Each structure stands twice: as structure tokens, then as C-alpha cells.
Amino acid sequence: MKTNKNLWILVLVCVINSLGFGIIVPVLYTYGKTFGLTGTTLGVLTASFSVAQFFATPILGSLSDKWGRKPLLVISLAGTCISFLLFAEARLLWILFAARILDGLTGGNVSVAQAMVADTATPQNRAKRFGILGSSLAFGFVIGPFIGDVFNKISPQAPFFFAAAISLIGTLLAAFLLQETNPTSKQTRLNFDDRFKFKTLITTIRRPTIGTAVSTGFFLTMAQFTMIIGFQTFSVDVLKISPLTMGFFLAGFGICGIIMQLSVPFFIKTFSSKQMILLMSTVLCFAAMFISGFISLLIPFSICLCIYGLFNGLRNPMLNAIIADNIDHSEQGKILGINQSYASIGQTVGPLTAGVAAAISVHSIFFLSSFYILVAFLLCFRLKSKA
Image (cartoon, rainbow, N blue to C red; front, side, top):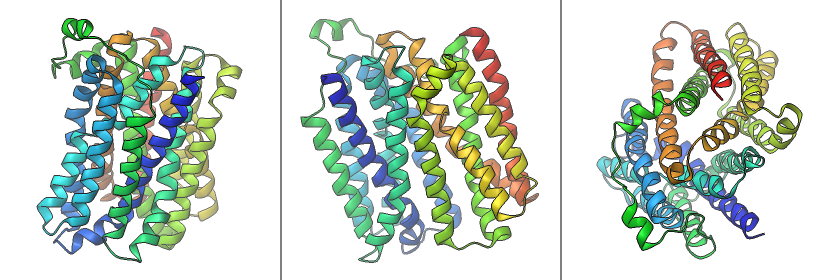
């Protein structure tokens, strides 16, 4: 019962955390323009978070293996809260960069929460619990932009203060209600080598099953963030839809992912093999994205986006469960942190390559995204043979 209570507290913490991020994303560029932020520097600002997170997340995960998950999660959430306050009080452009880098350096929220789920889950219910956690993150991203728009009408700083307030609530929930899932003692800490070596980022990729799963997630993440750039460009230049309609589109995409992640128990019961579910969902995502490259009409594009949104939702629960199934408990935090590191780089590389593809045509962005999915599909075969 305590485990279930912990899971639902983690869900609430993740909703609050992703809600804060979802609130500031739509207003960040408009707010930053008052400090001289341009389209180019916005890309650098976005990338600064991902680069900082790439280096920090595996270190935070490794520290959570030694010192316990709870203190590292609290520190990560507190860092997010402080970064939002810096945004709200910023008067110079460099403070915006400092805030994003701070959030990236303390950005172990997701990977530590995943490690807490992995600590107490069994191979039978692990994918289900990762699905519940993933749906909570998606929920915050879905409703966040709408809340951000409401607060933005009060003042430009209001969304950031509200995001800081709910991040503080998440920090307090984690500090006072969450139960530690990786209890350690003075003796175990003395015997634990917490010196994270960055060559582990490479050696992890070389590990048969784990490395293949991390690489698969990297390419699927690149595909998703490439698609998001394509969607924005296609919606404005071809479909000619309004920003409000675009917001509803993105909300619908997020809801599709939530529905599918909550349906993970059905897929596990039906197919039993996580690798087979991943293979099937990747095929359908590839088909939807490849066909999107030939479409110029709203309804067919909406159908393809819905199919992609649904089956892309199975990605993280399956991959996280496969990784957790194949690692020792003593390295749960470190490996899940490394997985999150590669995902953060995928979130940066995807949009950058999408920008290059956009110079050819809007449709080429969807073909590039489908290429990344195809690489992931081939890796899924390798994953299936090794698992």
C-alpha cells in the first residue's frame, strides 16, 4: 500500500513539475524579447538547458544510487523552482541563460522519479508504472500552455511566478510525503563509488541490451522533436491555421500519448513481450510520419498525427521497463540518468536537423523524422534478439 501511495505522490510531483514547464514554454520568447532575445538566441537558450542536463543528469542519478532518491529529487525540484524565480525577476538576457542552465544542472527530476518507480516495481508491473508516470508528465505539458496564457494576461512575469509556486509545492510534497525507495546506510555509502566517469556515457551505449534501448530512445526522441518543428512550419505555411488551433492540435497530440500510456497494461497482457510492443508501435509511427510527408490537407494530416501520437506514447514506458529489467539495482539511477541525457541531446539535435531539412521543403522535415524512426525500428530488431 505504501508503494502505491508513493507512486501517486510521484505522479502528482511529475504533474506539477511538467505543468510548470508547460506554462512557460509558450510565453518564453515573447517575454525574452524585452531583454533582446531573438529567434537565434532562443535556440541557443533552449539548447543550453539540454546541454546542461546532458552532463548533470547521470551524475545526479549516480548520486541518488549512493545517497538515496528522495534528497536528489528534492534538490532537483528546488532548482527548478529557483530557475522560474530567476526568470520572473530577470532584467538582463544573461539571467535567462543562467536560469535555464540552473534548471538543466538540477534537471534530474524525471530520471530520479523513474529510478524510484524502478526500485519498487516488479518485471510484471514495471511497464505499467512507467506508463502511469509518463502520462502524468504528458498531462502537465498538455494543460500548461493554456494556464500560461491565462496568467500572461495578468502580467508578463505572472506565468513564471505561478510556475515557481507550483514547483515549490512539488518540492514540499517530495520532502514531506514521499517515502525513500533506495535507503542507504553509512556503511553502504562508504562502499559505494559515486565518482561518475563521463566515459560511462560511451560504455553504456556499448552494453548489448541497455545500449540498444538507449540508442533506440535517442532516435525516437530526435524523430519526435523533428516532427514538432515540421508540425509548426506545416501548420503555418501550408494549412494556414491559427496559433489557437495549433495549441489544440498539440494538446490533442499529448492526450493521445496519455491514453496510450494508461493503456500499457492492456498491451502487456495482449502481447506479453515489451520488445514486440515497441517494434509494432515503431512501425506504425514510421508509417504515419512517412505518409505525412505527402499530405497537404488538414484531415488526412490530423489522422496521421493522431496515429503517431498514440503509438509514440508507448515508447518511454517500454524502453524504460526494458532498461530497468536489465540493470542491477545499484545502478538504476545512473543508467536511467544516462538514458535521460541522450534524450535531452535528441531534443536538441532533432530541431537543428529539422531546420536544415526545412531549407529543402516543409515536407522533407517529415521524411527526416521518418528516417530517424526507421533507424530506431532497425535497432528494435537488434533489441528483440538480445533481450
